[in-house]
Image (tube, rainbow, N blue to C red; front, side, top):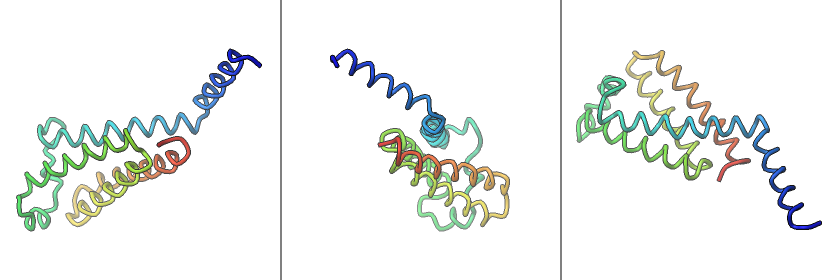
Length: 140
């Protein structure tokens, strides 16, 4: 077998791997959990999507030494870092995003409002957990 044949076999193996539905699901979730945390994190500074401060439980804002608005900006920084971590090392970043979303859910539940968003974030947390499981097979 010459090197051209080996190269073609390698290329075909990669093409078959990328055609697998599980790999495609991994890619969809990977891109999602890069973009979503980074966009949400950046928007904590610009409030183009929403006023994020409204989602912070008053009791958390009350105990924060930097106040609610600045705390939400710090949250934005954490979200940006989490999105970048998913990009670079999804095996590590995905469970961090899942845990972060669970903390957001707890925050919303303690407010007793925005329960629809808490439910949505539960779906996102489960998606991040699924990404973590798939990253164990496909990711770094």
